[in-house]
Length: 395
Image (cartoon, rainbow, N blue to C red; front, side, top):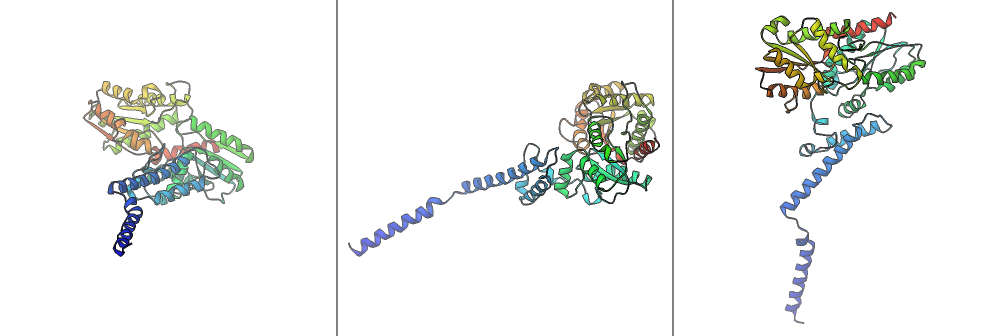
């Protein structure tokens, strides 16, 4: 074989090999972009799965590690990947939303409790600012009123506990943890103060936990929730409901810039307090609060609920009631201890189903404003809890 032919064959062979190793495996810009997009989606989905795993109401031996893993995986994402996080309960706001400085809070999970403890039990909130102003505000007022007692905290929502722990590194006790801590610290006299609005489902669950530990203390007393006893029907009111009605209305009027409720009424203003609502028999408490507003002569004050239970507290029903009364300006405010997700989104949000948007879209009102303040930061409300503790101490 001639030398020239050999060279030609070698050249063709090398070219073929190059195509196999290089040309054949090369990707187009479109393919590269698609591959990167798939990788981004996979990374985001993995974080979403980790978030969904801790979005649960039951604490397990793996919870602490799961919270840590979810946050570390989130921190490893790029900004673009974070926007892709989407799961059954996961979204970019789970870790990404700024709700304030968690370092200003006190989880009140310290040991060295002493023999006398007041355990303040709340549903909880992952909104840092309102947790400080509302829940911590109540706890601080109780601690100031009873300096000889150790004030500690428990949340009944494990979902919220996990959220705060994963995002902010703040560890808050659930009911069982708080009660076990009290036992281990030698507490003899325990007072439990629920910050819940009423004797509803959350209160019932709280009582089950307390009853399970009752024989491990010398005395256990449970103070009334904010609105006191429920009563049999919508006409039943009491001193607690009257005090709450006066306190929240006075605060709303002041924040709206009026000297009195009558002055606001003359200006065509209606105040609408939005509670959560419940299918529990305690839902009559919302109707009782409306009755209480009427008994106080607060004709331009209305009570509604997110869940629309009772039916007359649905947003549609409240809009109709305000329309019939002829008020042209509406001020929305939470009937909730904390101004958290419901207050910021269900009440004051920009989605079509928020109360603010529904009132606006009705076309019946000149203005619709929202006051995003929880009941817990109102001094008069804090003192009601203090008084409830005094009541059980004196029993």
